[in-house]
Length: 452
Image 1 (cartoon, rainbow, N blue to C red):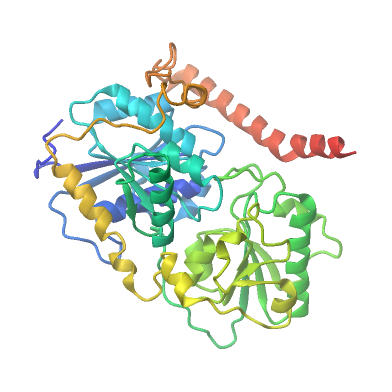
Image 2 (image 1 turned 180 degrees about the horizontal axis):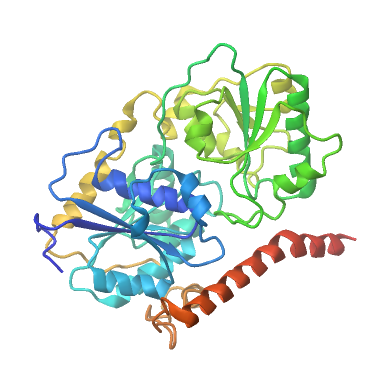
């Protein structure tokens, strides 16, 4: 590997992601950390090469999902699917300078132990964080991410909470670095005459029950009927059979097919890049989607629904104090909530124009780590000695032994073509399809039977 301080070779960055939304977060984070924002690129001393590695699993994004993420600054030819062990081999063999782990907490922990077990003489800088609002499993998710060189927080509020968790268990909190969500941007909202578009940002797993999801769909359709001059859009994350960061057992598309009375002409189901949908949005409605923060950043009127309660299980408790909590009854009547400016300032929304500087501290930390002659060994909070009943299971899910080394048989090279490769790919796709069929069709039936 070239010396870390070499100015003659490209800065090599790998993004490992396990879903479409985490790929979006990871790729844009890598871009902001190394080249600046798309609108204000920094002067680079070295060219930057960002490679995308998609961790094989139930939520590995499809080509359609990758396309809908939009431009994240990574060439299509530099994106490939890998297993956990293949990723570790790539880090060992390809000499990455920076690795961004855009993964669920357990996968981050496994990769940290796997990277530590490589014992590289010049290891990459390791960065991780969260793709959006952190409203559940705060301690669990944070401790599983501990050990990375940089744990990004999307706001001042999150940074304070993250440090409190680490310090509360006696763990080093110095890796916590305040930044912002990397995908905020777009033109500020400007009302246009003759346009009145309401968008409901759906979430795959919130709410979870058929009754609650049907209720939200019914109220959205009723809103369209009450306001025939409005365009009412249901923004969907995935098509039936696809998975995102969270499992969607009851797709709104299926529920809409069974809705009595059909759908009014001013109501449509839409897909696509969220930023492009927000370009034509005059009111965003959601339960707790991160899309609300994107909307608020652009000063688009935004509503967080309280119809199903304000509950931790829904994630809308995160918006307590925001001034955004409201109900369909109020929205039907024409009222729009007004955001609390103090709350906004603490959430990293940065609608005041300071967003361009949100990554300066994180960039400086990455630069300092890259300039170091040697990085310290990775030291996650969980070890076989401190979490012997928890850690081995996490590592085993990624075919790693308790010491972070690949389990026997896990390191076999992949077939990359020919009959065996085609058969392997067909079997994998069949298994993935069977899993999705079980999640979306069989599991709900079993649950209903259990409720009888």
